[in-house]
Amino acid sequence: MIAAALAMVSSAASAQTYPARPITLLVPFAAGGPTDTVARMTAQSMSKLLGQTIVVENATGAGGTIATARAARAEPDGYTLLIHHIGISTAATLYRKLPYDTKTAFAPIGLVTNAPMTIIARADLPPNNLAELITYIKANGDKMTFGNAGLGAASHLCGMLFMTAIDKQVLTVPYKGNAPVMNDLIAKQIDLTCDQTTNTTGPIASKLVKSYATTTKTRLASMPDLPTADEAGLKGFEVGAWHGLYAPKGTPDDVVRKLSKTLQEALRDPDLVKRFNEINTEPVAQDEATPEALKVKLLSEVDRWKPIIEAAGQFAD
Ligand code: ASP
Image 1: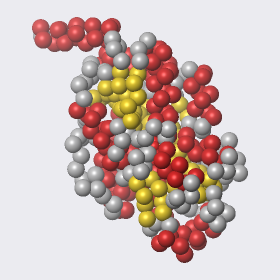
Image 2 (image 1 turned 60 degrees about the vertical axis):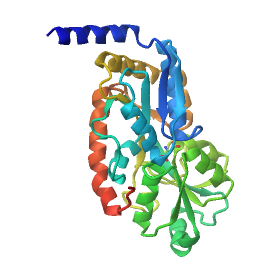
Image 3 (image 1 turned 90 degrees about the horizontal axis):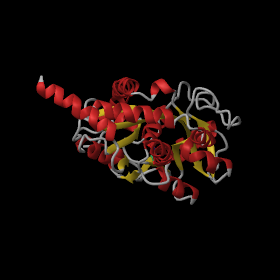
């Protein structure tokens, strides 16, 4: 009883004084890419509210699992956090061995954003619509390249689903994030990718890349001419990236609650909402930026992707 009482006192005290020093936010992908952009924008708003610096650290590699492993073994004191996307749930099946248990290693803080994805190519790729692209890949796919942010990234998942749907494999080129993928696509060093609108809205608008479809159920208001993959012939093709904010398991509940409340407030910051809107990235509703909602999402997404990934049969050891 005394121990329990002391734990409660110390937890309350830690939430009152927290954060007393800068917080490190681990980002699993390269600077300048979609996850990094979501992380930096959110961190900026949260840091204003917390009155403390949030240092964003890009801990890249192995499709995001390096940063995830670091966060899982970090001190559970609220000073090391992780932002990750849908890939945290797909990596649970894609990687045969992970040094953490995806379902239990974290204290979820809340969902952050939803971001649609787009199937895009280098600006001079000949096909002019998705049907032509599929025909072109079937004929030339053996000589083509598909850039992604590593096994376990959203771009990997989207590419894997796309290749399965058209029944043709294209050589994938893994990068440490979609920022370098985009650079090489614009430089015409690779042929294709599937990337979040967070990263593609600008290059599509300025025609630095060619766009073929969104991976959403309905067209995006800001890109009314771009069909959905479903409309353009890939029936039922739908995938999007959602982001979540995590602390290591064992982080005091009061600290997690304080972070969740701060996240909810940050996501209503008009400046942040406007900046997210400009890149077609949707902040989640207040009741989704909660530990409960992220926990449900994480567990259900691990279970949802498991059979799909197992059927596609691509694993990492
Ligand atoms: N989120 C991207 C992807 O999974 C990677 C990145 O953020 O750079 O494809």
